[in-house]
Length: 251
Image (cartoon, rainbow, N blue to C red):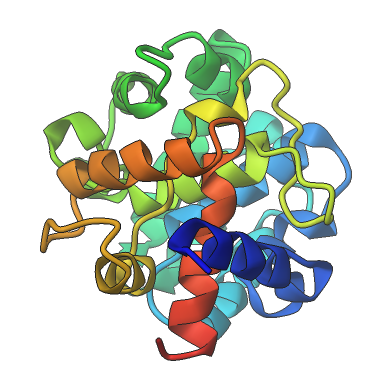
């Protein structure tokens, strides 16, 4: 069995509905409306570092603070509503960051037609990297707290952008297993990049898929070049394989 066949088997194994119950993707699965799914998904992915249990707990608190009605909260919140968010904290993401994210998201929905439109309009070279770069510029073009900018990564400045790439996988990838949502029809999943983290990075190196030691933008490009050969139409299905082997099999 070659590496491609091995990863296809592992992708099939881990890309199943049973994956949802222990993963942060369960948070957007609580909603049915498109805007609620994408907003809850974006906020959840933003704080997705640390162990998955704590991410899920913190994301659930975020949703509760928004009345479990994220799109309505984004559009119609009052100053009093925002003040309630000050008590939120997850690692280095605090209540001030949360408030900035709410106001920046409102700006995007009110002035740019929503998250999908912003990401879809800036695709270059069959890649989402420029889209992420442009998204960050739009996200922070309104008055913002300087400290919050670190919570939105930029691949064109060297970041692997793991959390945004994960969010894009959730929204774009058309998944017959019911894990990823595939609700963003204007973006082709062949343009997606694998959310490279410590687990997927370590497995990719052990399998000889990447040679770069850092989990950064250049490593993502290296991994893209291989995974897009393995499956040109659905390269990020291998995220399930790389992550699953690393987390569940301690490969």
